[in-house]
Each structure stands twice: as C-alpha cells, then as structure tokens.
Amino acid sequence: MTRPSLYRALTLVVMVCVMLAGALPVLALDKDRQDRAIAAAQKAVEYLKTKQGADGSWSPQPGPAITALVVRGLLMSPGFNAKDQSISLGVAYILSKARPDGGIHGGILENYNTAISLSALALVRDHPGVPEKIKAAQDYLRNLQWAGQADPAGKPIDESHPFYGGAGYGREGRPDMSNTQIMLEGLADSGMDCKDPAFQRAMVFISRCQGSSTNKMYGARIANDGGFIYATSQGKDKIGTLESKAGEVKMEDGTTRLATYGSMTYAGFKSYLYAQLPRDDSRVVEAFGWIQHNYTLDENPGLPRAENKNMQGYYYYLLTFSRALDAWGQQTIKLSNGSERDWAADLIDKLTATQNPDGSWTNKADRWMEGDPTLTTAYALIAIEHALR
Image (cartoon, rainbow, N blue to C red; front, side):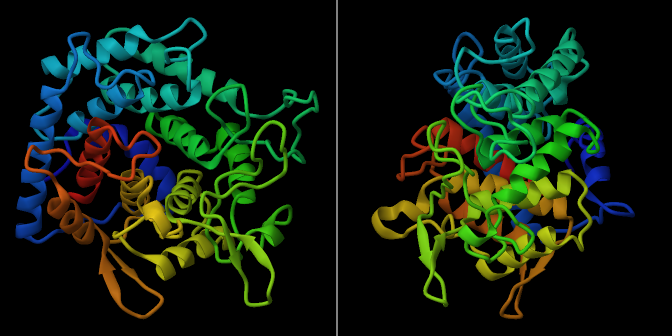
C-alpha cells in the first residue's frame, strides 16, 4: 500500500529538505503487519466519521486544530480525497476560522491552531481560495515567531534573548518546543523552503532546548544526553528559567540538571531534519544518540513514572516519533545495546494492540487534551499512515 499520490506530491518539498541526497528508499513491511495496519486505519476512519459535528468540525473547543488533524488523517488514508463529504465539510469549517491577518483560529492558541490547520490545507491546495489562505497563514506564523519584537517586559528580542526563534501559543506568554516544532511542521508541510529565515531562527531556539555540547547558553543546565526539554523560560515572568516536563535528574558528578524526554526530543530531531541540518551536525548526532539510548513505544520516555506521568502526551509522542523517523528515512534503528529495531513494525504492533473495539484510541493519562478520543485517534491514524509504505 502506498500513500495517496496527492500526499506524496505535497510532501516532496519536505523530503527534499530532509534527505541529503538521493531518493527516499522504499521500505517494506511484512504482509501481516501491513494488513493489520490497514484494518486499524479503516476502523479509525469509520470511528472518526461518526464523531463529526453538523458544522463539519471535530472537537472544536480549542479551535480548528483537532478538525485539521482529522482531515489530515483522512486525506492520508487510501480512498479519500477533497471531494469526500466529511472532508469537504471539515475543510469548510477550517476555512471559516481564517482571519484577515492570516491566522486560522477561534481566538485562542493562535500558533497551535494556525500551524495544524496549515498542514491540513496543504493537502487540499487545489480547493478554491486555499492557496491564498496558505500564503496568509505562513506569513502569520512568521509574524508570531519571537524575533525582533519586545518581550513582555519590553526588552528587545535579539539573538541573545531566551525567546529568540521560538513560537508559543500566541503573542502572550513565552515560546516552547512543542509550538515551535508545530510551526515548522506547518511551514514545511505547506511547501516553505527550508532555507527560509523562519527555519533558521527556529534552529536557535530549538538548539537552546537541547542537552548538547554545542548549547553554549543553557547546556550546563540540561542533562547532557542529546535530548530536549520543553522551554527556555517558565513564563513571561520567568524568562531564562528553563522548564522540563520531566523534572530534574542527578548527574554522575553529583550536580542536578533538567531531564530530557521523548516527545520533545523527537520534535527537536524532526525539526533539525526539516531545516536540512547535515546528518553529521553534532546536534543531529546527539539527538539521534538519545533516540538510540531511549528507544521505546511503551511510554513517553523520560517523564516520571510516578502517578502514571510517563503516559502523559503518549499519543502525541507516537505521532512525533512516526513523523521524525519517517523523515529520517531508515527502516531500522541500531540501538545503543547493539540490537536493531524496525520502528514502523514496532509502531504498528503497538497501535493495533491498543486500539479499542470501536476503532478509537484513548489515553487514561488525561493531559494535553488526550482525554479526548477524537484527538488521540487522529494522532494514531496519522502515525499509522507514516508507518505504512
């Protein structure tokens, strides 16, 4: 099974930026896994179609983002195109949230909603009015990115500032890794050149969230394992006070540093690939080293296991895992213990084993909106489509 030709064409620009040379290799799954993945995806599609509202939306409370994720998952599934009624209604709902300034949101979570909507609209760019909305949304995201304006205290944000190059939920608060990687994903999916200044600025912020030997600003405060934390500031009143959802870890030398964790590490790794950093760049090497040391699909690795916190953001983790390793383009990963894992096969095994009888996936660790089975099912469906070749 292959992805729809429309999806392949629209992701060509991203793949060119991701791969250093040559064509993306054709990777094969065994027939049993392929059949199970296709069946799981079909069940997920049927489930999602029953959850669409009369206005064309899915779970509209935070804005059009969840609708956009579902539309994207459906369009990545064989047999769907922009003429399908559920997709047409979903696209119309997304477009109804487009604003004169280019944003696509309902008044909150402006970057999050606009970026995810942009990724979905890129798959229906032949739809009337969509090309103009794509260009406007790209410009809107550029303008939201922290660079050149003043921070909440009035200090100019130049390259020495902790906010520089990042994106947050909107113009308030502070930037974070999640919003920054979602912004880059929307820009990349919609065809923006990876040499655009928005990508280059984002590399500054993303690099400062990495526990890397090259992180001159914050490297001494993050576990030096190649992984990533959440943000360079805890809030607009705590600029430069780092934040990790994984807490702290004691190092061998007795010092305490912020711990890195899975979803943000795959997000940072994927962003490096989208920005076409060379694969021998130390930041890429160290991030991939973290993956080799911490490879798992049983949890969001690095998050505390007490009170089931290691399962928070789990389906977001699986989605980011799948997009990052699909972009990496290698079927197997050699782990630090010398073994090799087929990431797509592992992902399909996990998702087909955890799907509910009604076709949905649910996360009992209800944080970051993952208590909504529509969202987690959209995440899982997209992840499966990245695993299928």
